Image 1 (spheres, rainbow, N blue to C red):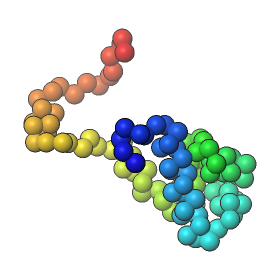
Image 2 (image 1 turned 90 degrees about the vertical axis):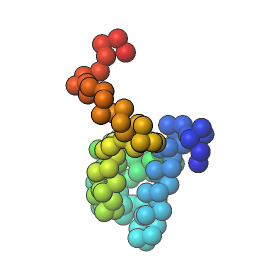
Image 3 (image 1 turned 180 degrees about the vertical axis):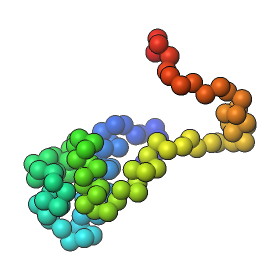
Image 4 (image 1 turned 45 degrees about the vertical axis):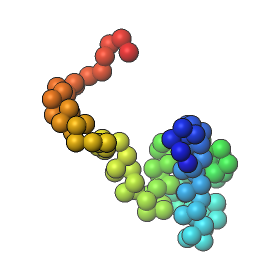
Length: 102
């Protein structure tokens, strides 16, 4: 999927599809994963079909599927495109807060 065609909905559906694939690799039914994770079956079914789920429920699914490492790297560090980007980062003072107007 190209960066241009990514939308929040397509990203959520992609995550749901990968969770479904992991579930099927383990030979689990939707009900089995819902039970193991503590997520209601209705919530899990909605997730597989629409990609919608609370963050807490998504983390619970990750624990049940032994996929928590992926959360450790989410938003962890910036990737650089060039050495110039790295050098510029060292020159810019790191803000502790965001802008008030934006």
